[in-house]
Image 1 (cartoon, helix red, strand yellow):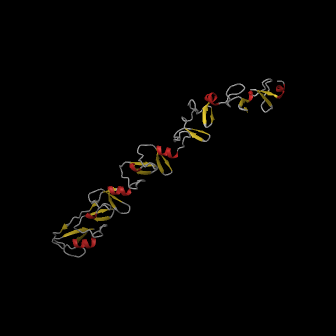
Image 2 (tube, rainbow, N blue to C red; image 1 turned 120 degrees about the vertical axis):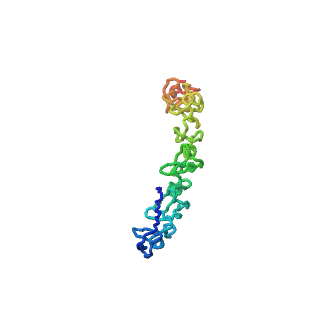
Image 3 (cartoon, rainbow, N blue to C red; image 1 turned 60 degrees about the vertical axis):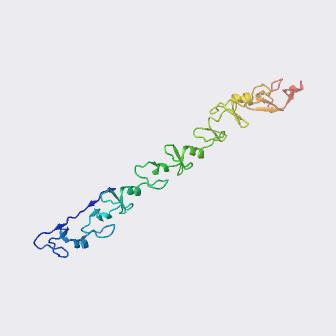
Length: 297
């Protein structure tokens, strides 16, 4: 809180009375002399200095009759002793702060002493200066820095990790998941495949580059393909129907034998059409036969 001092300039009286007029303490005659009226008592200047004068809280000496006295909350100072406890600037005609510990300070030093301290440099944040407040703490604007790159955040967005502050790029680089394909941070969205994170724009068909997020796809030798490209470029052809064996939809089981592959529903006896899945069969040329039909060949 700021105050202005309350001065108590003294009125020195001079007696011209002809009747007896003595000092209350020493009984010296005050006719024609300076005296001070103290609590309705007439006191010569010598007795005043010795007996009645208030003690200066700064220098601990009496404030004599000839000195100018300044007072605040029942405390007294010589005019020249009334100074800022920090910078020693005279405060007789200036606004000042009276602290709880009894110290008197000018407005600037009082603000520094009592103000909030920057969490970066631990110096006082002066009122009106550029600062940042976050979670009931305060920083000088230039002290509010990214923990990683050490650059001031200023108008950028930022995120915290524990007590540390990061600019968005450094936070993403340090803490965000990395895309399995491009190895760059995934800042928004993304998908997961086989416990690996991907950017949606990186999760595309190996052949046609069409995005596969939310679409049907299959994998082959660490590459992923849309259904159409897998059928055309990757899938084996059924030795029976000559169509791709994709594993999608009807007939997902496959029969492989001596370099040939069949849909399970195509693995039938060439003559009687009996399914040969999980049964004994005979391969004659490019065709398969059940045991009975093979005997009739």
